[in-house]
Length: 102
Image (cartoon, rainbow, N blue to C red; front, top):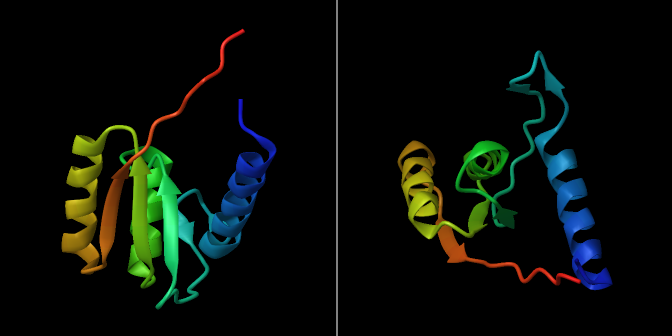
């Protein structure tokens, strides 16, 4: 279970990504064109799926991207692909979650 500060950070990050990525039209086209040069984005779960696409889009817009993932090997593969496509600065970091069971 997340602590209150962790929950607040999570909500802020998700809200920020929602605003940055803009509204989608027809499922895949992103309409927002905001440049993010000089900004840093931390994306969790970026080694696949929505997280990887969010990291890719943020990198395309000029952000430095920090990929926080549990599977570092997969994350490094995705990061290399994003670097080749965008030339962006991508950092990969291992994260793990401690789940309290009752």
